[in-house]
Length: 143
Image 1 (cartoon, rainbow, N blue to C red):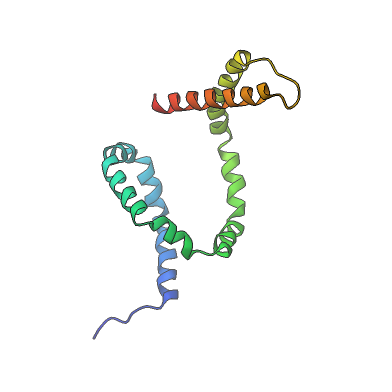
Image 2: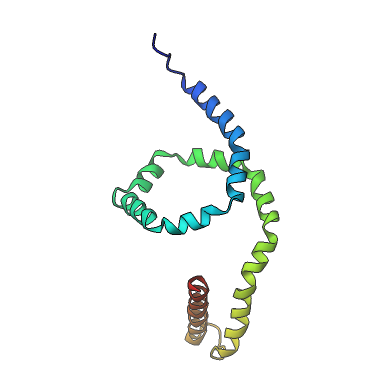
């Protein structure tokens, strides 16, 4: 006798149960630290996969299948996780902003003197600051 096909609700319930049970495996897998080496080694596979996704417009097609209401509901359902995540990441944010603020402090003295309100030199100052900050960020990323 063939095994009966489960209902969608049964499949979803099993998925939730297994995902809950898999939390410990996930945490131990993350702690294993081999993911980084393997991810770097698999860069060519990632590039191939992403090229296929882009060529077939799979991201776009996936987005088109999801309603605004679905993601809005997901955000509403999980809104309490955002604040906790932000709080837990405070030190990391500070560490990430340290070089940016240092760059800003070193770039500002090199900018042209501020002009009157609406003067073109003010736009040039902001463009120069933006360009130099971008260049510094790209240098940090490639280091």
